[in-house]
Image (cartoon, rainbow, N blue to C red; front, side, top):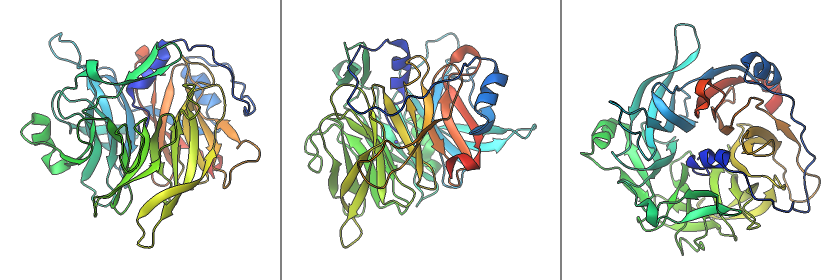
Length: 396
């Protein structure tokens, strides 16, 4: 649920220089970045207060690019999107496929992926995978099911329009039972569609722990009252009811439930200035426990940068997110506290990653001992998956 500004965006962001835009009136104190280098000993030392045992999980020998990975509830598998290296000199695929892999250890005792399996239909564009905690062998993700007609897709632009990514209208939220993954990858079976009609982008999905609520972003007009500009909605999978949750102006997306499922986090272009900011809000439920709305929205960032891909720490006290604060060719991951009410001083922030190249899309495993993210710090500077141990004191 990249999660999630669609993962393809950050490749576009790195290649463009942003337009000059005025800073909003409230700006958190600046973070002065230390000197960094591609020498691993330097960034390992710089990150040592937050991360240790940084390990690359995917490699350009197998994937042209890979990213936006999420842990299974047990932490022994991951789901991610990638473009596989083509065979026989053929060009790589135009779109991301979805993959599931076991998270194991190699002979040296380091984290490693095994049994990598594609779980998406051939030729389709895919994004934002997620494990359904109520059914351990089931995943959900955004898929076009067939090759999208990208020329017809609406786009999101920053500044002059050099800063753009696509929202294929064919994209919808689908469900895959992993026992059928081979048939789906071969094209002999199709995933089950949970949300979206193929006429308006619907993706960036997660499910509640009990599997009842499907949380997603949609560009559909009137989706549970949503306005169609990139809005957040929830579908009760037991009743089929779709409820609008955040339908403010601008593009709202990338939602996640907090660990106690009392709050949401997301990012928004609320000011229509193409500068994404991170928000959280409280969830409202009706007497039956069904989600009926949101309240008490709080802004966690308010600056002249692109801030996106927020994700909760398991304590619910902090979140991590990616930001262009250090530069549009060097996105970095920050940690920020989660305030209980709006107003007051800006929440405290800490820079987490310190290497050259983009570090984005951070996530934690269930107990917060591991952080996984997408990074360009490896050889060749391609976007690949990395994992590290979290220094516990940093996130408590």
